Image 1: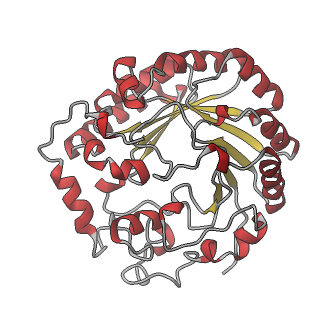
Image 2: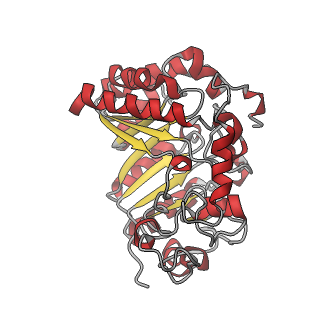
Length: 360
């Protein structure tokens, strides 16, 4: 099948991070500092991404501020004409560091927040970061950069949704991504502590609607669906290997940030293979493109061009088969896995979980 040009590159510069959030999207097997790509290797990745047709790069981690070469990478990305977004916890974003990043050419910064108050946010993050985030938001706005924010929603903070939105508005955010937890990696390991009750989610959806009416165009609010509670799965990254790619800290090239969880695939590394070849010709990127690979009921489903059978990572993590219909789908023979998990939360206590299970 014809292969599109990728729109975005997610550059995971490191897995190191001062926070230890229980829903972290990084894999359970975190890469150590000595395994990270060097500065010159990352510069080569950026040049290859530009050759491939990438339009924007998201520098992330872990915490990308822990890389002392971040400014150099930002500068090279801008020289190549790429839009540069920095995704950060805000920890370590001093006035000097922000000034250096701005001079290097960063276009926007996305700041994470865990809850509406430090009393809840700091235990979730496992680090006293909430006040540091407030200071980082002020610095970003003072220097004139667009401030985007995101929060992962789960059992412990859904009740604060309106307060979280109000907080982000008061901090000057132009855009807020309200991302209901996606259960891969650390979030899947901690699913019993994170998964909300259906009633909680319904209350949060009503709060989201109220906030939309209240703030109008003052802030852009994005609601990321909690797919365990949906009838149909979310599209698989706009199609596996169709619109974006991720380079992990050790150089592996992935169709999405969670793809390393699929143990039945071997992912090429930029240390040995060029990014253009990986995108166009590698077995891993071609594994689930199109629809020829699909089993029933996906193969004959009228939704196959809408959600591409759902998430390949979720299918593998819940069934052991990355080709399987995403168990979120109501038509999946594995739907019971998700239904059972949701059902166990019907009478669960929704107070602050015990974060001793974090395991990082």
